Image (cartoon, rainbow, N blue to C red):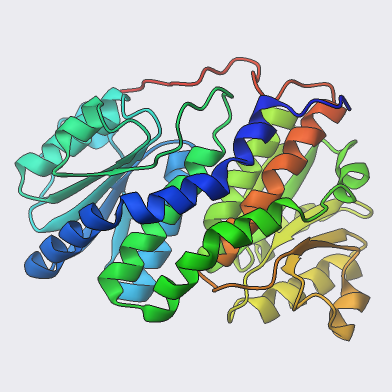
Length: 352
């Protein structure tokens, strides 16, 4: 491994400063958005995104449904761009997430939603972009230029923007307070040593990344990063869903990554780790330091990847992906790949 960190790793390490700025800069626009949403009382929510941004939208779904009871669906842009359907989006909250704000299908879906009377929100790293122009409200990510093909700081910025929005909209004082500590906790996550996982992961060709609830969006993102940077065929699963057909693929001496947060999903994740170990698999769990030293866990886990003390269940997944990004960038280099420029990919992908 070279002494110079990859661009991907360097950019991932910028996230704490970006989030600190974002929490201040976006406060006014988010308060205006919350006022509008409170006045309209949308009947449902729709998210529009692809790739890493769509994983951020999975996080949005869990936030909106658990904190506000607002049923949230992920849009299929081709319903409009290819099949020319007349979707009934009036009275909806529609959130588009895009690092570039350029993809034609995302923009066209947003334009259609606004024309139908939906409350439209663009979360983008480029506040002067087609997506931003199409939306009523623009929430900047403030990540600055992202040179590596694999998104890191822009993904974390998307998550924190969504968390701040829902915290304000739900008047959750505990979450609002925890957000103020988020930049410091992200900095602590960057100091957590996940290098012990590198020998376990270096030679594998496939794995599962397993989480539940708020963490499922992070499992999706981690699985994508395994694929695009380290050429590992990783699949993201809910800890409930993996116990069905996919569990037939658990192999002896093969590592599986489990991602946790400090909420009611944690006991189920521990039970899943036991099942994997009983079948001869190698459960590797990312877990907060104030939770990891339980005697039961010590007997279950093959490896515990440390995280800072739990800040808030909704924000714990951000610590996980913050610690994961440098590790997977280093893993890619160990496996002979360039995580800054993955094969067959480009930074901005425009689809219809």
